[in-house]
Image (cartoon, rainbow, N blue to C red; front, side, top):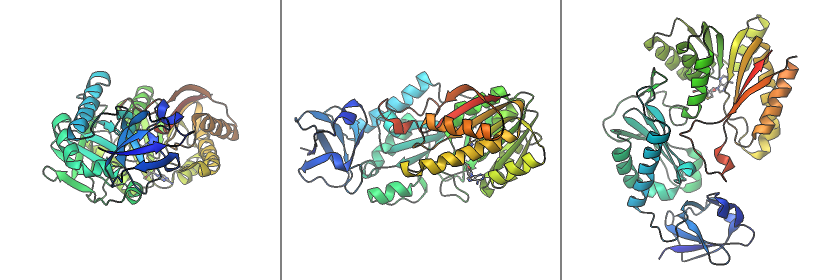
Amino acid sequence: MSAIVHLRPGFVQPVWAGHPWVFAQAIARTEGSPGAGDEVLVLDPQGKALGRGYWSPGSAIPVRLLTRDANATLDARFLARRIAEAARWRREVANLPSPDHTGYRLVNAEGDQLPGLTVDVFGDAASVQFGTVGLKRREEAIFDALAEHARVTRLYEVSSERHQQREGFTVTDGLVRGSPSPTLDFVEGGVRFTVPAPGAEGGGQKTGYYFDQRENRALVGSLAKGRRVLDAYSYVGGFALAAAKGGAREVRSVDSSAHAIAAGERIARENGLDGVITHTRGDAKTVLTQLADAGERFDLVVLDPPKLAHSAREVEKATGHYRRLNAMATRVLAPGGLLVTCSCSGSVNVDTFLRAVSAGVRDAGRDASVLAVRGAATDHPSPVAFAEGRYLKCVVARVP
Ligand code: SAH
C-alpha cells in the first residue's frame, strides 16, 4: 500500500486538467508516512484518484505525477515502458535519430510523462539529469532502459544544483556507464559536433548542447544563402554553423565563454567552415554596440541570450533588457534584414516578449513584420496544460 496524498478543495483543477505538479500548498494531509522517493497516490477531496508520483519531502512541489492510473506501479518496468515510448515516438514522428541528426532530446521530463528526468542523446552517448529524488533512487533501472532503448553505450550523469538542493541528493558530473571518453560527438544538420563530455575540462553548459533550438537553426540555415549573418550568444555556434552550411557569405559569432569560442573554432575547422565563420569572445552588448558604431550591417541577426528572468519577479527587468538587446540587434541589420530573436525565460510569455521586441525595434527607428513565432523543437514536447514547458520563444521578423 502506498501512502496517500489528499488535496485541498480549490487546488484540484490544474492537476485534473493535466498540469503534473502538486504544490505543497495544495496538500491537505498525507496518509501513511512516505519516505523520500516513495510512491504516493494523489486523491482529490472527494477521494477520486488524480494519479501517482514519487514523494519529494521538502520540495515546494512534493509530487509530480507520472501517471493518472491509480493502479499503476512506478517500478523498473513502468520506467522502461515510458523510456521506450519516448524513443519510439521520436523515431516515428520526429525521425530522430537520422544520419543528419544524431543528437536530440530523448526524454523531456513532463512532456514524456517522466517529470524529473531529462535525457539528451549524443550519437552513442547520453547525458542524464535527475530532478527528483524518486527517479534518482531508481537510477539503475533508468540506466538499463536507456542502454536498451536509446542504443547508447556511454551514459553520463549531469547535475543540477537547483534540483539537488531541493530534493536532497548530490551528483558529480561524469560517466556512469561505459568506457570514458572526453567528448560527446554527434551530427546536426550534417555538421559534425564535438563538445566536452560532462565532467571533462570545459564540460558542457546545461546538458552539453542546446537541442531545443535545432529546428530554428535549420530554419536559419535555409534562410542564410548569400547573406551576411551575425550569431549573438552563439555558444559553440550552432546557428553560425547552420548558416555557414546553408551558404552564408560571411558569419560572425559572439559569445562570452572562452570554452564555447574555442570549441566553436575547432568545430568550424573540422567541418571545413572556418573560412566563413569568425568567432569573437566578448560581451554581446559591447560587441553589438561596436559593430553598430563601425557601420557594420548584417542581413540576418540571431539573438539567443541566456535566461534573463528566473521568476515572475524578474519579468519587468528582463523585459527592459530584451528591449535594449533587440534595439542593438536591429541597429546592425541591413534594410530588409531578418531578425531571429529568442527568449528562453519561461516567465516571460510570448506576448510580453513580442512587446519587448517591437519596442526595441522602434527604439532603433525601424519597424518589423513577424514571419514566424516558433518554439522548441519537436523532441521537446510539453503537456498541453503545462505552460512552463513552453519556455522557448523564437521570433523571426523582417525589418525593412
Ligand atoms: N545559440 C546557442 C545557445 C546560446 S545559450 C545555440 O544555438 O547553441 C546562451 C549563451 O550566451 C551561452 O553560450 C553563454 O556563454 C552566452 N552568454 C552569456 N552571457 C553573455 C554575454 N554577456 N555576452 C555574450 N554571450 C553571453
